[in-house]
Amino acid sequence: MLPGDPGFEQARRVWNGLVDKRPAAIAYCTGVDDVVAAISLARENNVPLSVRSGGHNVAGNSVCEGGLVIDLSRMKSRLVDDTRRVAAVEAGLTLAEFDSATQAFGLATTMGVNGDTGIAGLTLGGGFGKLGRRYGLACDNLLSAEIVTADGRVLQASASENPDLFWGLRGGGGNFGVVTRFEYRLHEIGTEVLAGAVTFLEPRAREALRFYDSFATAAPDQLSLDAAFVTSAGERLFSIAIFYSGPSGKAEQILAPLLDYAEGTAADVRLARVPYLQVQSAGDAVFRTGRRYSWKAQFMRELTEDAIDVLLDVYRRAPNENALLVFQQVGGAISRIPVSEAAYACRNAEFDCFPIAIWDDPAKDQENISWVREAWAAIRPHSTGAVYVNNLGEEGQERIKAAYGPNYQRLVELKNKYDPMNMFCLNQNIKPTA
Ligand SMILES: Cc1cc2nc3c(=O)[nH]c(=O)nc-3n(C[C@H](O)[C@H](O)[C@H](O)COP(=O)(O)OP(=O)(O)OC[C@H]3O[C@@H](n4cnc5c(N)ncnc54)[C@H](O)[C@@H]3O)c2cc1C
Image 1 (tube, rainbow, N blue to C red):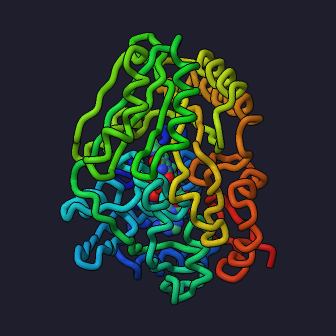
Image 2 (spheres, rainbow, N blue to C red; image 1 turned 180 degrees about the vertical axis):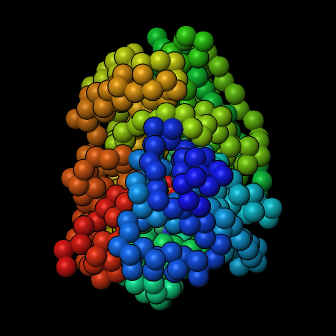
């Protein structure tokens, strides 16, 4: 698709309405041969390229200015083998499409919390979600991948084929080529889970944050507790989202401390058995495509008294009612996998904490972006210093190194081997040194 073609204006847009780039062409690939051809075209003509699957990344790196966008969103074949509990899927699937295919068999693997996110970008950066504490990250459940490298070769990567590349694909993002196919391990979770929320008015938030920190960090793997400051009808609230995927018989005992605490302190308590697919799409209305978004994330190990002071203060300064201050819980199985196992390195955190600004009026860009930056800076002394690569904006090379920690040097060596000319540079870039 070229500028001027019908639909081009829409086709160059991505999830984040702040991103406004004009590529020279968009190649809608329908199979691996198309991807090989698109990469060859870019290489032979020295054209910058970007790779887009779900188009959901906050940084907007999946589109480029004046270059070629390799778009995989039409590559959606999916095959679920319920006997082997394996899903073989093409890279253009969204999370909602992946989840609905596996849930037809009562199976699932860890995916994120927003249905229109692409499985490709999510998995290649790590991929956390409600099942992560139980089964590890999306990338921890990856069994193999098919990838087209900068020189146009189609390679398989798994524990037995090109294992170095397989290591790098599990967290190293889009640095090594275009992944066309993923194979995931699935888990039997049934089609329903226990889910809900406990919500506190702001005057109770300090105490509720203390409780959240101690209860969440001691929770069993089947329980995942994300939380957020939100504003509803002018009222600032702190809400803990409950997701329990373990045996029903144990739920009451596991959740008793939370429900006891909520009694008399919470403004609202909701808990019910609901379809897993319903939980997975619950955030979709909040994160609609095309609005303007900014966020800046960092990991936290605990919510100390000093950290709680800061968290309360930054949310009071939020620019509007759409703003959120989110805690995505990690830990559990994610943290029991050695850091050297895969490129993804941030395994010792409990929470991914990030202020999110959402707005529509371009005149408000500065106000919203400034709040996010100031909130992040205030929280920074209480963080681990590390960051989830999929939540990075354009934050510079030091932050990319912070995301990979001890794995960074090994990623540079892989980049030297598979993409020494840095063709795949529109990403959280590992710079080759060869
Ligand atoms: C509202 C929202 C909620 C989110 N929730 C979660 C969550 O719960 N858990 C979580 O882990 N993350 C979450 N994320 C972050 C998400 O994982 C990243 O934004 C991810 O990059 C999205 O993947 P995508 O395919 O849609 O990205 P795109 O924007 O299409 O691509 C982003 C980058 O990924 C790389 N890439 C994409 N496809 C390929 C491919 N086929 N081959 C090689 N490289 C490729 C490229 O470098 C590209 O620049 C969320 C993001 C948003 C906006």
